[in-house]
Length: 153
Image 1 (cartoon, rainbow, N blue to C red):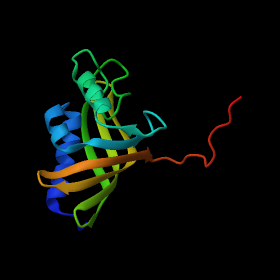
Image 2: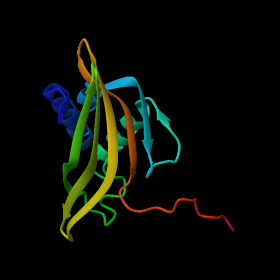
Image 3: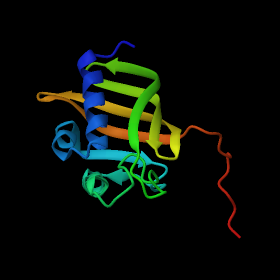
Image 4: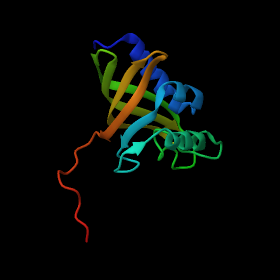
């Protein structure tokens, strides 16, 4: 990987802020005009950060078992303990822009055991005067999908 180590540190700080429901750090590491594709949320582009502000605020509630990066977590009524790993991490830097691509591995532990889920992800960071910030995110399944969408009956 040839990307600026400060950009990698910003990526990890950003991701951890989501798991911690830390809105202050999330805002410090994200541009207001953020764009995202999150296949497990909606098949459409999401613009701006208010969407994630809501998800992170809800995930932080003590009566919520879901998590901001995995809304289906805790479906059994127990909020899982979570760690993430970035498998096959690659950073491509072009001036003040870095594209990180990787397979996100989410390991979640509950009283029922440990579950590991994965999906592919790209995050684009740009270096501003106040540091590296996420400007775009694209997520896709890490399993085989059909080339054509399912037919409707």
